[in-house]
Image 1 (cartoon, rainbow, N blue to C red):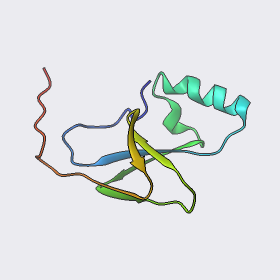
Image 2: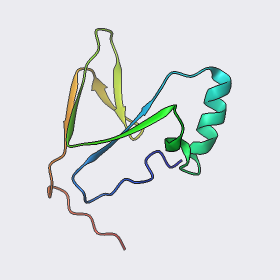
Image 3: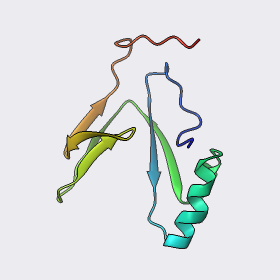
Length: 89
């Protein structure tokens, strides 16, 4: 799946993709586009670049990133530029 096709590992930005509420048939059609990365041009997805984000909810909500469980909301996420050095081969 290509959730955020424009993401850059070295731009010090968070690529936030918001998935809007959809009917089940619309989800099937929308998520098939995720495999080609063409979903972001539909009205069901929104792509935002940011340097940090705070997530909150009055309800109990589990938080995960990239498929890994990280804890419960509230959660604050920031980019720390230059902390991890990555080199693409």
